[in-house]
Structures are given as C-alpha cells and as structure tokens.
Length: 314
Ligand SMILES: [Zn+2]
Image 1: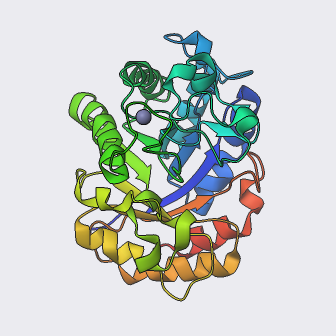
Image 2: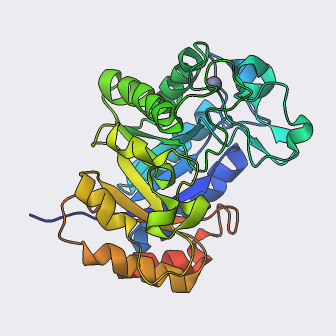
C-alpha cells in the first residue's frame, strides 16, 4: 500500500487578484510536489446567501472556478477554510459577522476598538449563528468544489465569558466541544465532507510545554475527549523545540494528524523530523506549510520552508 503524504500549503485568500497570482505559480508548486492547497477565505467570498457578510473586493465565483480548474489540472486537493468561533477581529477591525450581528458576540458591547483583547469570538450557544455560517459553508464547498472544509478554531481565548448571558460560568471545554460537534454534525453528518481544524485548543499548554498560544491554558483542552476522531487535526508549531509531543498524543487518541510549521527553517526541519518518526502510522497525513502573510500568492515558490518541506516528504 502506498501512502500518499499530504504536501500542503496554507494561505489567506480573499481577492481575485490574489487568486490569479496563485494560479500563476501553481504549476511550479505542483512540480515541487504540492498536492494540498488550503485557502483561508473567511469573509472574502461573494456570498449570495448572506451578501451582507462579504468582505471588501471578495473572490468571485469566476475567480473560485479559475482556482478549481488550476488545481484539478495538477491533481492538487483544494480545501477552503472558514475561521470559526475565534479570530472574528484583527487589531481594531471587527469582521463582518460580528459587525453586522453584534448580538452574536461572546462579549457584546465590551472592549471598544478591540482594546485589551486578542480577537473577538462569536458565542457558540447563540442560536442565530449556525444557520448563517452553515449557509456560508455550503457556498464555499460548492464554489471551490471541495470535499473538505477547514473550520479554523485556533487561539480561541474568549470562551465562556462572564459577559455572555448564555455561557457565563460554563465549562470552556464543553463549550468548545459543542462548537466542534455542531460543525462536525453539519459538515460530516449532513454534507459528507471531511472536517479539518487547528489542534491547539485541544492540547494542555502546561503538560505539553507548548504554552498558551500553541496549546491551551484556558480550560478548553479536555474537549479532546468529547469530539469525533475523524476530524483532521492541523497541529501547528512554529518555534524550535526539542520534541513536538502533540503529534504522538493526537495519533494515540485516534485522530488523523497534519503537522504544520511556519517561517523558521530550523523549526521546519525539527517538526518534519518529528512527523516522519510516525511516517508509517496510517493517520500521519503529511505536512502543512503555513505562510501568515510572510509570503503571499505569487511568492510561495521562493519561501525556503516550502522548499524544505516539499523536499523532505516521501
Ligand atoms: Zn456565549
């Protein structure tokens, strides 16, 4: 049995101009071995079910179709991402869902200009949220002809807030698991596509030594035992560490694991080494190169960690 490793890149994508730059370098990336492309679209698509949630100059249906065609031509799996629960703002900018529907905010009316917080979260228990985001999921799956969706869910710090009338006093792990299970129920249960998410909130930041960014110190990690085991966990770690214990931990729990690194070449080598220690495990999927604006569409072939990873993977 051959095991086809995922040789992936993750990048933000929210304009047609960026789509076309990406399409332009896809043949070169495919020649380097790329076979999975995760595009974080979020509000950057010309949604028809909820046009009020479109970001500025969003990707059009025609733009998405150009990307689909380019990926299909080179046998690259295209997976769109819609960032759920956390990351609903960045610096002073609040993203469309909570701007248009401020009642969905986990901390409604708090933190003017987003001062004093990292990012806003939506409330996982507000009954109005899921019908809207599931409609957006549907549009992304259709436009990107995708058989999987990445729901994000990293770095959720605002959960079970004292400012939320529904969640105040609730267990953060149970709230986080509820959100995961809701999205899984829709994506896997109803739409029959694969669900992917970032893994950090499922890790104990103290026990693993990862700390409060790459893992959780806000009580969400027990959710690891409350969610289905067919979710692909994208296990991101960007710092140099002697070992990356989360890979074995997630595999032992029964999850498919896709380790992911960023810009440090030293950390990329070390995380790849850790991943390849498990190369014969059927749930070790491969490797994901994240970019986080360090390089953009059209510049990916020049990014050393991408060359390192695509060279290293069997
Ligand atoms: Zn809430």
